[in-house]
Image (cartoon, rainbow, N blue to C red; front, side, top):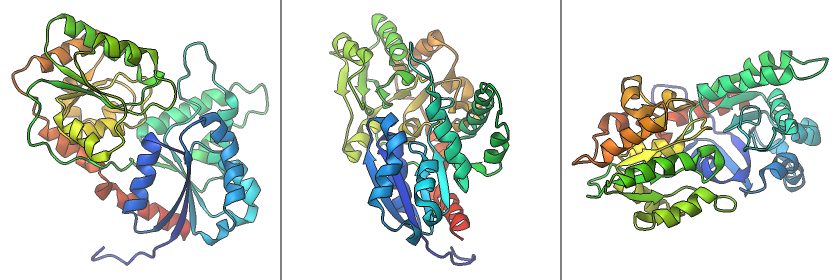
Length: 364
């Protein structure tokens, strides 16, 4: 920090009750790169509904002296309001980080939104000192969903809560661990899927496009990466049978070095998500030299430079299929150097100053 005032290092308690996927990546990255002392307390990434209701009780029982910390970071998978009620005047100043929220998160077909969890996010944001979202898209979808949600109350609607939360909210992109640049690509085009194996990533749309391209005779391989927290979804079970001769990797890669090696081998990374508030997996793949093909919605137009929207963002499955086929039948991997330079701004080395400044602001 040459040329600026030396920053004091604070003691920060970070509670992450859903330590997996993007939550784990964010927590580990912040702890590793922050100039502050981060004490990370985690719970396994399963039973998310029980985490939202019960994690506060777990941490209340396990953390004897919360008042010794200068600041507290919580994520959206727990009730910060419950914890504040339990700890009372021992509660450190709070930063609440929203990876996702239960107001705008889509629900599977046949299910209905559970409004108890929506209230958990709202009351948690109200009792927090600062609220941080991982993209502008996410922040605006939260507030528009909250406004519609509160109108559902039959009377005594607390519409004031939206303005109260917005006044202390900001956007800070999550830091990403970007792989080193690839030296070469596989000779046979490799398609990367490195998203969660869940309904909100619409894997059936992806496999439909792959099936149509395979029927046309294109030569390519598939690496189906990404984390799966419960039973393997049916689209992946079907894909393992249908594309057995093309799949070179099926399942989550725990080892970070091996995971990055797969990304560097890839020609293209595809998303068909109906829910994405940032897109760490896409940024990682682009950083490794993959050409992204992404739906023209959610956070994707925000993380891709506008000059590349036409060549990266698609409107429907037909357009996705055509763009993907064009890449897979090209004589050489696409040049993504401009995109690699663009996503470098999401590296931890670039964003950590914003997080440390926020902690400094709250802790003081």
